[in-house]
Amino acid sequence: MPLPHYRGRFAPSPTGDLHFGSMVAAVGSYLDAKAHGGEWIVRIEDVDITRCTQASAVSILKTLEKFGFEWDGPVVYQSQRTAIYQDYFNTLKNRGIVYGCACSRKELAENPKGIDGAPLYLGKCRQGITDGRAVRSWRLQVPDDAITFEDRIQGTQTQHLAQDVGDFVVLRADGLFAYQFAVVVDDIEQGITDIIRGADLLDSTPRQIWLYRCLDHTPPSYAHLPLAVNSHQEKLSKQTLAPSVASHDPVPMLRNVLSFLGIPINADTDSLADFWKLAISSWDIGKVYKKQKIESFL
Ligand SMILES: [Zn+2]
Image (cartoon, rainbow, N blue to C red; front, side, top):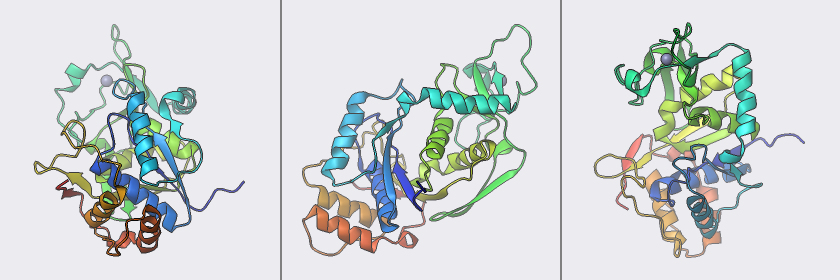
């Protein structure tokens, strides 16, 4: 069966209920897929089982249903895909582009900070680890070169992985595969052509593009939506006490999401089906605010 010309996805982490910020990513990815006559897949990103709960996953799916989202195919759970990640990891290992790292969190904390605020990895274990030290995590070698991509909303983006991040972890010290790695494997396996998500992941994209290249796959197209932040410029999340979306009256919330993005729906309707019809026909990603953060008053 040939792949559809467009396959998008929404990939929430089940660490709490959906809030306004996650609804922005759900709506943006859904409308872009539907406006292209494409498929839209839901994937539960619970690879980090230490932070995720089954109850949150159930609550997220229920909320999506009540908001009238229709997804294609079964919902995929990262926690059930360890064998697939292991296969892809073996490919990297056989190519000699991942290596064991013995550095502890404490040692790494002495390094300068990288682009995402985490310690920059300076390549200490790249040439092997010294006697008496044990492998803790596995890192992927990055090129000493800039990675550039065209974001459909944020424009041209460039990052120098070696200077901005360093060799990064694909298999963690606790034995779990790293988020960056699992996401890319899933997007490859699911044939995702277009990724629409929040701008908090803009910094991760060059690492993910590098993973695509290392695995001999063409990266998808990317669009990073403005991130909903509170008055302290913090991402809305369970940690910053963002309220859960109430699903008893979905249309006003969906209207707020589209106004937040810069594509207000002015027609007067209370019907969810009519709302989605209107929203799909008026979706124009070129009109989305070209900002990485917007304060949300919800
Ligand atoms: Zn190391």
